Image 1: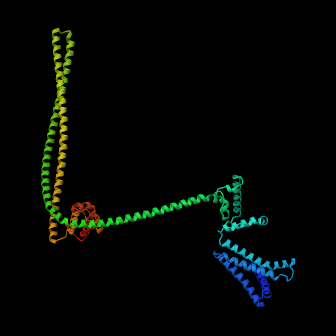
Image 2 (image 1 turned 120 degrees about the vertical axis):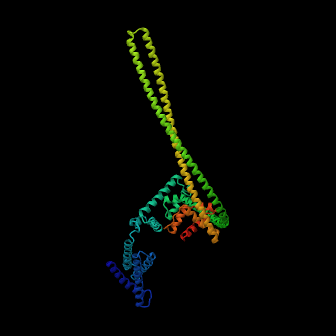
Image 3 (image 1 turned 90 degrees about the vertical axis):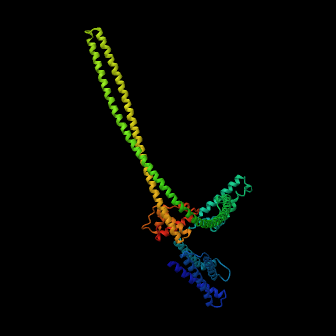
Length: 515
């Protein structure tokens, strides 16, 4: 930095002296003072623009065009300094050296400034891609081709010199391939095949140029698809708008129908209340009589089942006694058979000393005893089987009697339940009748009557509202009284009307209403 400032001071001093003297003598500024002011203006202008350029580069907001006026003023300074050293007569070699020496310091100064600006850019914008410099030897060996490469690198933002060389090599190789394909006549190639040569001046690579037709067709297809999508979206929005309009119309119509149904329901409720009160008492009386009759019948059936059960137990005891008697008889027959068998053995032993007649008589007697014993054993077995059958029948009759008794007990409990329900319905009918009388005396509207009826339905269903907030009361009432119950009770088709009845009933109960 110190060396740059020293160089700037030396350059300004030398430039100021030469430009001021040249402006006074050759540019006809009139006086030396005006020539000095001109020199000061040029040098100060250069310094100010350089300072602004460096400051904006440091702030990461560079002004690209400000460098060109700096270069222009520097070139003017170089020309003026060189002209101040020009000879008055013919030019000699030393004169050219002298003129060039007068312009060396400004050129060196601007070079240092550009170096500083580039250093600032590298510090404040490290992410900026560095631009490769073209080798000096290439400028010397192929100035025209190198100038074209430099131009394209600047125009199309290619920062890599090797990348630019690779692009040129690909383009040359592709062109040679086309010549080989069409035997030296590239004019036979199609438009798509000639695209790399046509698009190379605009910064396209060979691959990018060859991919252009497909990309353009794809872009055209995407634009067509986008247009079709917008059209479908427009149609969808139109259909949605129509559907919303139709839905709004139907909602309005539904509200009208709901109001009409509510008015019709309130009109019919008054008539329905009177009919309900008359029929409620009749139904309650009929149910009570039916419940009493069912209870008496169930009691009689239970007593008959108990008698049948006792009779089955007696039959089972008798069958068991017969079975024991048959078993005793069988044992006696078995003993007699054994005795007969012993007699037969004894007769066989005494056969040698007894006469034939006595032995035959004894044998016949023994055979008769054996036959009798067999008959008695068969009879005992028959009686045992009969006793077993009677026992099984008795057990079956006992099971039937037990089942009948259970059935009769269940019927009795059902009858008692029906009787209790009939009593509750009778009490509810009486409560409803008193409530109707009170409502008639109070001259309530049909809607107020309906709301109170919903509250009574909740109490009759066993709802518990003690200690509950309004929200809890509403949940409790909704638990025991559904919208369908309200619609069925008051013959209304609108669920909105039924829901409002329940809400108003909750408010009524919260206000202290009790039937």
